[in-house]
Image 1 (tube, rainbow, N blue to C red):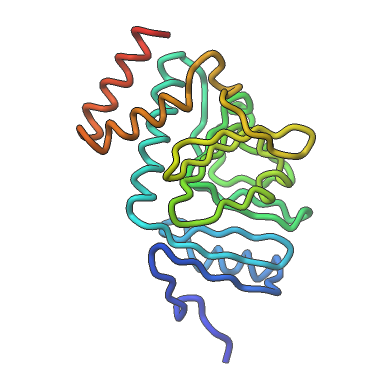
Image 2: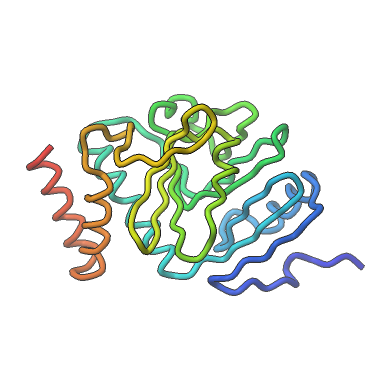
Length: 212
């Protein structure tokens, strides 16, 4: 009798690695897990990692996503937020779920879509990973061609840009040129922790309006 996915328990802050998982099995697992779930997956050539983030991971993800949305809205830049949607390409045998993601330059290509298939759709312009509990798999994002990846760790924000198929570290973001994005994200995440989300977001919005 085959093992059912619901029989497997992965606790918050932990991950499980499965090998020799076919693409068909991956699709079945994703369907069984459903859309509304805490777990995230990362898949590459038969290896499947299932991770369950800690609550603080989820909180930081929401805060960074909110900061990005405020910037895009203030500058009246069209965008489509895709959260932790599954980015997958069967031909490349790759799938990954960022903590949150945004279509900015390519937003028109995904208007009205609920699911992304990277065999036909462009990758998101920006993917964000909060790496408190899980190891960000750069290879997935590199192979899938995501041009900009933000990784937030306990040391702060790191920006990686795709150049000739490999990520290089950067202090600036092409999606937000001339904005000290690393300093801003680090500063206002800390403010959220000390004075609360609502006041910190008001402060951020005021800073952007007054300085940019």
